[in-house]
Each structure stands twice: as C-alpha cells, then as structure tokens.
Amino acid sequence: MTCDSNSCDISEACVANNRTLFVIGSASVPIVERALLSVRLRRNGSVALNVRALDISILTTSRRRSKAFLIERYVDNNCGHILGDEVWPAFRMMQKYAPNSDRLGHESDLYVDRPSRPRCDDYFDALVKNGEVFDLNLKTEVESRIICYDHVYFGMSGFSYVDEDLAYLSSPVFSADAKAFRNKFYMKYPSKEKENPDKLVIMEKRSGDHLTNIDNINELKLAAARTFKELDVLIACLEDYSVGNQVELMSRTKMLISLPGSDVMNAIFMQDDSTLLVYCRFVNGVKENSNEIRLWFRYLVHLRVFEFCSEFPDVRLEDNRNVWINVTRLNDTKYEQRLIPHGR
Image (cartoon, rainbow, N blue to C red):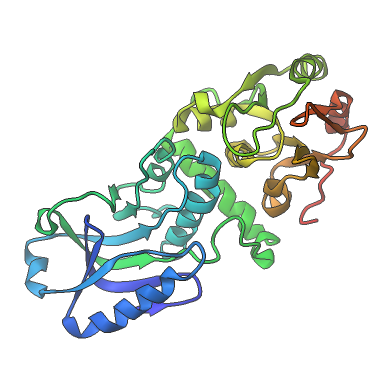
C-alpha cells in the first residue's frame, strides 16, 4: 500500500458491500488498518471500513476488475454541497489515477456511502464509464458479492472545492479539469439543444439553510427580458429538476443570476463564455459574499463572472431575510468582460 497527502492505493484487494475491505495476506492487515484509521482523521478524506485478511483462493471465484474508488460521504440532501465537496473530489481522485481523460472511468467501479435520501446521487453515475456505482452501506452476506481489483483507492484530502489550493486553482489545469468534469456530465446526460445556449435563468430557493430569495424577482425578470432580448428568461428552483435535467438546463443557460448559495455550484455545467452573476445576500443581518465565487468560479477562465455587493445601490436587506437588488446593474454585464478578475 502507498499513500501520499491526498489518497492511498492498495494493490490486490477486494471489496464487499458490507463496508469490508479484504486484503490478500494476513501479514499486511496491521499496516493497512493503521493507515485507514489515520485517513479517517483527515478532513474530507475518510473511509470507515473494516480490514480483514483474505485467502488468495477467493480470487479464483470472484469478479476481477482494474480499479475501485471508495467515497465517504458527509452530506445527504444538498446537491450543491454534494457536487463540490464529494463528486468533484471523487472526480479528481479518479483523474489522478487515470490521467488520460479518454480512459477515465474505464473498468473502474465507484463505492459510495449512500445516504438515506439519495436525491442527488445520480451525480456519481456520470463519473464511471464502463463500471458500476455500488452502495457501501448495502447489508448483504460477504460471500454474496465480493469484487477484487488490481488497485483500490481511497482518500480525497485536498481535493474539495473548499480546500483553496491556490497553485492549482491559478493554473490552466484547473479550468481544463473543470471543463473535463462538465463534459463527462454532457456525455452522461446529452442534449441536442445545448449547442447554442438560449436561456437566462434566475435562481429561486424554497428550502435549505440560509433561505433567502430576491425580493424584487419579478422586476428582475422583466429587466432581464428587456436587456437580453435574445434570451428566454425563466425563474427556476433546482428542487424541481432531476440531476440530468439540472445538467441540461445549465448547458442551455447563457446567463445565470443567483444569490450566494450551494445552487451556484451548478454553474460548472454552463458552456464556455456563459455568464454567472451573483448578488450578495444577508445572513442574520450581515452582508455575505459568494463563497462559490471566492473559492472556485473566479479562477475559471472560460466563464464570465460578476458579483455585485455594494450594500447600496446594489443590494438591500428586505423583511429581515430577502434581498432587494439593483436590476440596472444588468447593463454592466453586457459591456464588461468580467468584474471579478481571474484569481482575485
């Protein structure tokens, strides 16, 4: 077994769906067990598995594949957080061990700690090409399904969108990876209409933490229709869309307008030269910028990114929760390339 600061690679191992990892040869078990326990302590890089010795004869009766990736979970019903904190780092781990994008996911299986409310789990399905997505929590007899692999990988430390690896984010590699990630979802959920994005989408929330909406959203819709006559303007709540429909909607969105929040993460599926515009919100009376822009989108060179946050005239707290926004700022997005410099 070998480990680095991000993840670990165990050669010649087998996985059962009752959260058990088998390794060949009992002499290796104490080393592997200590390594697994140390990885559990890492932020966003943990896999909680039992470790047991495996008789090598099981290889003659078990399925054998190339690679398995073990993904531990920590949120279960917020699609935006799942996308940035779990699916994106899983993609980066898979890419690390299969760097050729044409082979990414080939003969690879993904083991996911399925939540009790798997509304957003279809995100993971886009990461595997010829493999399968298994549930680590499925309670079965160990002998009923054991799959052996040349390599089993786990650990995603440093790969999440919140980890702020500035050297990586500021390099051309990040934007290239983001586009490769987006394109995997395009292949999984193809749309014949996404060649020419023709929509302007205004995001609306109905549930979740920090429930805040645009107070004058209808005024914004009318102003957007006047300013961008070539685009079809609609108000959308992602709760109404499956993962596949979310990807299709974003692929057809030329401009996305939102308050800060995890729904903004779906802008990763927008096409090149599309526009992301975020107005600041208020949380407990305090103005709050977009973490999604600060940590991620300001570094993407293929998107036009704007953030309007002056407490007046750009935004104003209404009814102790919602936000009034200055709709005249839409004009600035027509004539400026972007108001958030790359990597600022």
